[in-house]
Amino acid sequence: MTGQRRSTAWFGATGRAGMIYRSWMRNQGFGAEVFDGRPVIGIATSASELAPCNAHLTRVAEAVKRGVWQAGGFPLEFPTMATGETLMRPTAMLYRNLMAMEVEELIRANPLDGVVLLSGCDKTTPAMLMAAASVDLPAVMVTGGPMLNGKYRGTDVGSGTHVWKFEEELKAGRMTQEECFFAEGCMARSNGHCMTMGTASTMACMAEALGMQLPGSATWPAVDARRFEIAQSAGKRIVEMVEEDLRPSRILTREAFENAIRVNAAIGGSTNAIVHLLAIAGRAEVDLSLDDFDTLIREIPTLVNLMPSGKYLMEDFCYAGGLPVVMRQLAEAGLLHGESVTATGNAVGENVAGAENFNTDVITTVEEPFQPAGSGTAVLRGNLCPGGAVIKQSAASAHLLKHQGRALVFDTVEDYHAVADDPDLDVDETTVLVIRGAGPKGYPGMPEVSNVALPAKLLKAGVTDMVRICDGRMSGTSYGTVVLHVTPESAVGGPLALVRTGDLITLDVAARTLNVEVSDEELAARRASWQAPESPYKSGYTWLYTQHVLQADEGADFDFLRGSRGHKVPRDSH
Ligand code: FES
Ligand code: MG
Image (cartoon, rainbow, N blue to C red):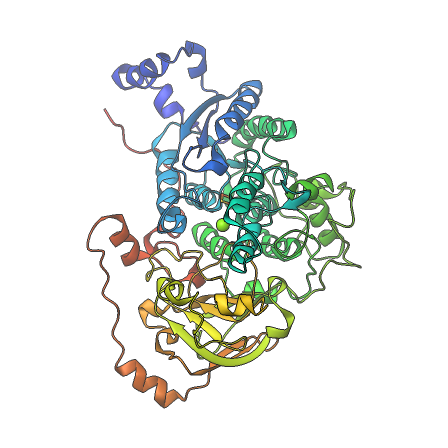
């Protein structure tokens, strides 16, 4: 550590200000010795009963504290906003940037030398990483870990993934409402976040792949004793990171993001990682583009056989050896930058060198992968998505990856739901469902509504998939041939706003194209008569959001939050 610790500006002060900084802290029973200049470590805890995936983080924080004390630091736990995926309306994503902003400011405004970030549910992990990148103080993340595998009638059921399945079963009359009530309890049977390879598990793996959490951290179940052991290790480690001045700017490099993108392909991770990694890179001032998510993964096979693309769940992934096994294999195949520095202080290649694979059915090999290279996420371009769109091939149906069909267009997802069960809906399995108004500005918040259930008429006829196109996102736990993140979104006048029912749409994933078969002249004529929808938000946070949110290809962060603002000690408060 060069120069004085940040916290010394508070706790080392003499006179009136120092008295104020220390005296009120002592009401918690801390002895005078904690102000002796030791590293002060913030433990940012997004625990909340309204974010059930994070509810147990208070216990994780206790384990982190043990480690901080053990290493000679002074731990101070503080609550942050928690963006729970399941309850927040209109979508937790509307609040990711608010949480990122809050965490950033809390870290900077307080007498902290380093911070441990406790996250879990989907948006909480990227929000905290965005914050850490913008403050650039030593930081290590501990995600809360996945729930135990869901168990229903003798089979494993995955959170999220089985919600979509049960919904289809219910709609098709193969399951009763009573059975669904029972099954929903079986799906979530312990603390933790979704145990499919949904967004939470994906982002936990991304944090580990980026080097921002300790190796092995992503997969230990929330209730496993190892979760608390690794949390304690992180507490010890952050004190050393402060001594070493190992900050996110050294960890979050272009190479680290390339590693994360490749790991995401190898684990069959969520499409939401694209938006979140772009946002984190924007904070870290790393030049990353949407196209990197296509070009960098073309040679990466999917190694991990987890729902929604495969059959296993996070517990199985953990017991098979977890993410280090995947990363070791990529490193050995020359598909990982092994030199990238991580929170351990060691290079990522060193961290994973000894990782052993205990179950090659769960974590397959590069030679015999679960899915071959080229089956990952594809970035599409065309006259329907000049700014790009995304499709997760491994979650799609092979026969629909090249498809031409007639558009059936809905301005809002509610418009679709209103008619989805209509037996006379003019739709067949070749129809392309277009749902717009679900982008960052339009919804607002770019919700996970794109994977709408198929029309009841088709489900009853045994159809299991159809092409859907939307400017929103979909849950990382879901599946289907769904084109997502269409950019620019319809609310800002992207071409998606100009499509009409009956237009022919051509999807060709191999060629990376998505086009509407309408002439440029006709599109220009439609544009001339297009009117931007009026936003009902004239004040408050949602107004701020709609004014400043960037499009999906820039991570849907706020324009004024990109970049790093550092951790200079603010002016005195007294
Ligand atoms: Fe919180 Fe899935 S709902 S992780
Ligand atoms: Mg989700």
